[in-house]
Image 1 (cartoon, rainbow, N blue to C red):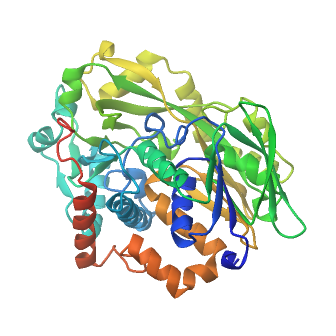
Image 2: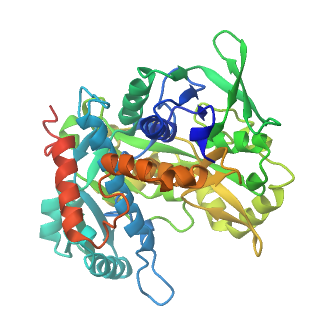
Image 3: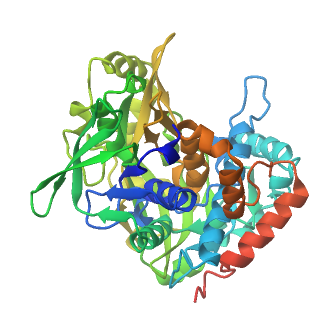
Length: 502
């Protein structure tokens, strides 16, 4: 679709990091575009983008073991890790561009330096981590990674997690000192504030999209309700993006595009244990990821995390998975049932039958009380005291169930862009590592829905201004990678010491 030849009326559904990112990109690329944003809550970035609803990890595959699965032949599959690591560097370039131009002003740092570590124990897990490390350091993007099986060295890296260990089990850790902690909610709200101040942008909070209908002239009629006044509103759009997190599946189904057929969703909720002891919080300064339980969804990989939230240093452990029929944290308990249609019932049933280990895992998680959760924490922090920790509700995610010709249906982890054949509508489904790779995902939306524009010299030049490495590989080009990292770090001014974040 060549939207430059149309009326340039664009509607974005949801005011999370995806819609905010796409809105800024489109307004930079199409300055005359009329952009309307609808958000059902009264503030931007309150669902998956909010700091309390995600891990805050700048996902670079430095520590996330589920991004580097072991193949049947025993080798490590690095394809996902390499892609995600490069995509996070792309996101940092875009944020640096916005901050450099005053488009993303923040009172406090929204991105901080923090070690990314993996910690495992047991002979098999140690062997896996070593093999993973040896494969990863062959690439410039991971070459700064350190590895150790020495308890004394690991104690220097993360003393809190080593105290009280008997030393009976072999233990190993990797460390990347260039990891980050990111407040995606702050970034989202910063971009929405920037958009609100621009001519031709209308941001509507507390507005819920009720219907999306294709018109005979090819445009979309978007029906909304003002949740404050109860008044209805209809908006015509040449292009619609559905970036509504867990709510995207229902809205995609309302659009009626054939590309949506066969997609279903399985909701997974979560909780954290949050430390309330300031002395303990100050003694841990890293994001340390462990090995996921068999059958667990990606959002449930255990990690002990140093976080900066609203200017306060925090320490969280989890997340613990749970089950809710809601598709959004602020959604309805009817969401799951209302999402079941003739076109997706078989994929959902067949995917469920093939993922009984996930069902078993979720049932076990739901039945856990605080003492059970605390016992799991002690595997990572042996000397933890239960009175120092309290439960905190985390975000709600919807894992994609996708139609599969051979298997009927399969559980699809990660994110997926679903677009109409004419490029007039696009939606984002799925979860992790979403926010960290948001810029690359929105570039994918542009590639699917604005292919002619994206290929033009004008757009290429503009995008390279925003993302200098655009069109080049950061995976193997060490010189470009080093230059890019140095530049974004300087502009974003990453805090080197979370103890004194000011």
